Length: 373
Image (cartoon, rainbow, N blue to C red; front, side, top):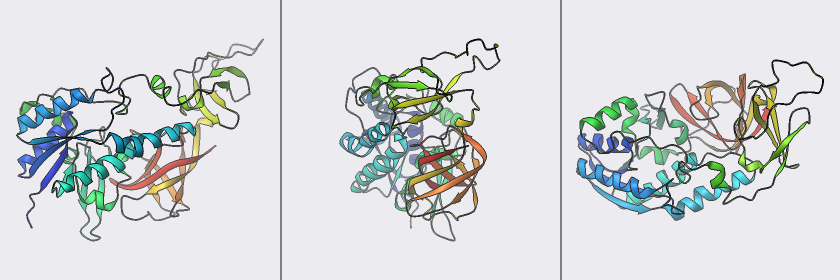
């Protein structure tokens, strides 16, 4: 069987996917580019214009010498990703739409479209790696070699069928090498700034965007001693561990001696949905911000099976976090429990808890409940 494939590459207009397409063509694959349009609302705004990205993607395809197709997945995105994003925020949680986008759009809607085009594989510019275990024949998702760019966290909800079709060429490289290759071959977007934030929000202020879709219910901001510090604009607009944008200052007891902690920063620590109260605490290491365990649901094991109970694994409860040791227990078809020997900071319902065995990503679930110290 030939190792050369018809590969459909998701070209985003960024440098990572551009170099992905170039590397695959250099390896002798038949490469076709697809530009995915996932958002249409106010797309002509200064914050989130896919038109500019498509022009960049088309220019890249021209330089590399491949065809490119523009495909609209905005309807699927709105139904499968954005609707869930809003439901989670309205429930007081903080979702990660990039995780859902990969599972539902890039490796489902996009994969299905690519298969209809006769693709044998699809490729994206994610910093991750895939290999097939020769003993089990299962496919394994590995961290990207560049620790500062590893994106396996966002891919943990893929299944074995999706992973078996995926290629991540830049996962074998460091970002500096990707930029160097882009410069060397004269890609027009070689120095393009990396995109940040959620694709449908872009660079615009997050609260301004969310305000269009979620109604405000102002309520009290209280500290851990039930002191009233001000009013919040709606619980959906805050996330645990948040420090800026609270609109409150320090609190000093009348007649109390001035102490070192008087001006410590305030952090969001809890949301009391039943009372519509936002709880804040002073100091980064306040006990309310630390947790030794969590419960996760909506589980997905990219490894093809659940990890062994009672065993310690590496874990991440947010992106760009170093792996922390965690003991997994109470594994069912619906959820699991993680216990941490070292307290974790601002573990946030709605985010993903992802498990690793060394460099191998096993999968994970959505954080449902957090048990503070």
